Amino acid sequence: MIMESIRLSTALGYTVGDRLVISAEAFESRVSHLDARRVMVEWPWREVDVDSRNSWGGTLGFPRDSDAYGWCNIPWRLEPDPEELEPGDPCFVGIPPTEVLVTTIEKFEPPADYGFLPRPDYFMEVVPLDMTDDEEAGYVIYLNGNEPIDIQVVGRDGAT
Image (cartoon, rainbow, N blue to C red; front, side, top):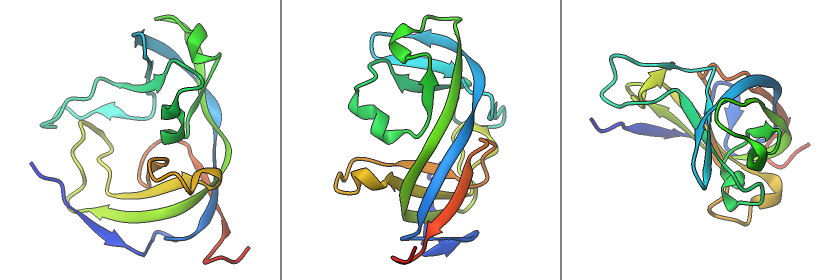
């Protein structure tokens, strides 16, 4: 099934070009498994979609190396340091206050089937302000997701 999206300039109170501060309180989770490059953490804010054509295993992956480039593509941070974690270890997952720029807003019609619930309908692509020159940096925030992300607009269209 092909998932299609419609590009928007504004939706749900956000506009492309907005400067935001995103954050999330640290939440306790657990390491599911790991390999040489990734730590897989149980993701408490989504559930497996049993009606999906795609599978999702209930985890989210993070780079094991705290200096890995992949950290610029995910807002979440782990404590303790991912290099110290082993399967079954408890850990905390949160987003430190991070100033980002909204680069894209899109709406999936119908909501996207990625194997988890809730199925995403709106998403924003954002990039940390200190990485706007890096075309590969940034991440997606699902606006109807259950992740407890606090989003504050701190500037609009170049204004503060």
